[in-house]
Length: 64
Image (cartoon, rainbow, N blue to C red):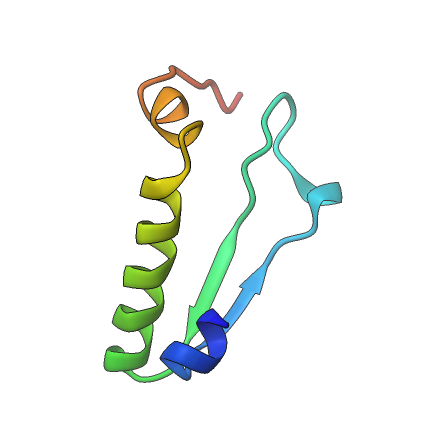
């Protein structure tokens, strides 16, 4: 629905390509500036509503 709502192209990397020891995934957003900003707004709002997100925001991670 984020793609429909923002009209942006949104691609999420495969879980097979995660950084070692993390569940982080790369999100690629394409489109006009307005479309990308709308997509970013939708994605960030979804993350903020996730109760587990805040515990990961302040966790130190090492990408060695």
